[in-house]
Image 1 (cartoon, rainbow, N blue to C red):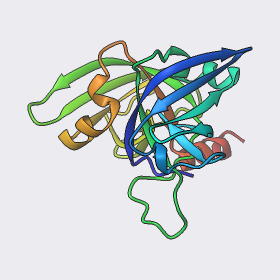
Image 2: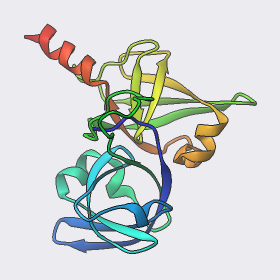
Image 3: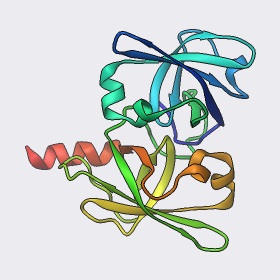
Length: 194
């Protein structure tokens, strides 16, 4: 379980294919603190650390993950939002995030508001892909507040701190991001449907 509060931005330094799997080496300021078999959210995708050294760690993405997230689009040099799991007893500064990406979305608009940035994302229509005005959404692992909620798109406003300390500073129009919709909303949608 995660909170959507990004701890560090790592960078992909190496990609190795093994069958249908991809092994990513990620250099980051927190890699040295990680442990083998630890779960870490990478752009909102929960992945297991399989190897590490003082400056980087390795994670593996299987074909299912590559098909449903933007990890298959990563190249060497890609910036990746990182978050370690929530510790029991810690403050929940974001919202409850599982690290299970629901779908990808495309940035269709980016506006510089001279002190903040407004990003608009478009996604496929699905009964479980629901946003609500002033509700929570997880974009590339970052917990954000929704506005301009529509059936297949929504906007988020990014403050300077978030812009500087996440990979939002590299998101442009046509960039593809990972989305995890609010778990409470998904449960409510399932109950209503049944």
